[in-house]
Image 1 (cartoon, rainbow, N blue to C red):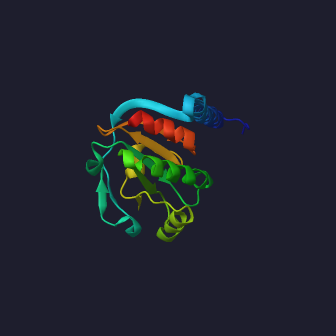
Image 2 (image 1 turned 90 degrees about the horizontal axis):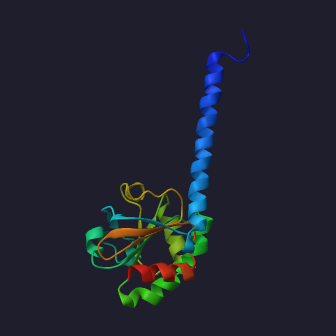
Image 3 (image 1 turned 45 degrees about the horizontal axis):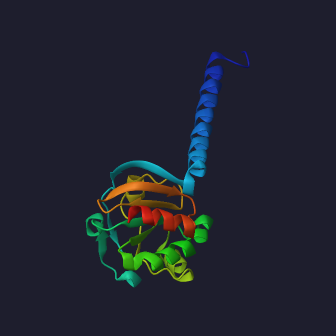
Length: 181
């Protein structure tokens, strides 16, 4: 029996093609993010998906929905306590939240694939004061998150106008918040 049968050759060709496609996709996502000013991805304005989240008790408990936030610019951040980049950006999010909260900007954090005690420890470690909730339903999937952290900038009409992949800095946050004000 020959070493390279027709079936084995077909498998190798398909595998190589899929691998090349995956590498191109990853390269495209990385280069598009890093080459854009601010490192954000402008996206066609589209309505932000609906959600209903149960806030952690230290943020008053209760639920928050997309409808509750209509008419206000929103910074929606997906994070995980075990994510090094999330830990890197947490102080920036808190700083900019404190700077802009009196101007009507709402920040909301969503802990993704995280245990409650780990998420609450993260919130305490970084003295996070803006509302946070554990992931509920398919919110991360509905928003199209691929990695952590990811931050979405939503205008007053409830439309996503920017998506930031990776840790965001204070300067980047300020600029993007000004864009949704």
